[in-house]
Length: 72
Image 1: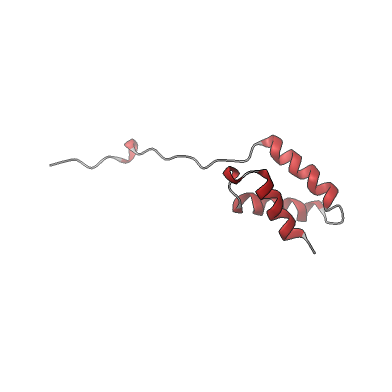
Image 2 (image 1 turned 45 degrees about the horizontal axis):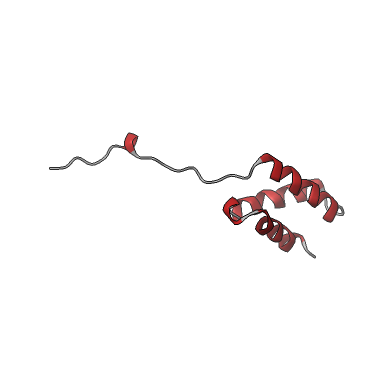
């Protein structure tokens, strides 16, 4: 009879996260590229895109997603 592993033995890998330098760079890019939008709109869009795009896909994928959402 084998015992099932307990929850304390389970290892959960944390998802990758965007680093602060990348976020600052993207904020600067968005301020220049989308200066006609309010900072709240830019920030909310960036946060949404950060949730949608995995850091493993890279910064260019995140920029493309932001551009897609904000292009008029």
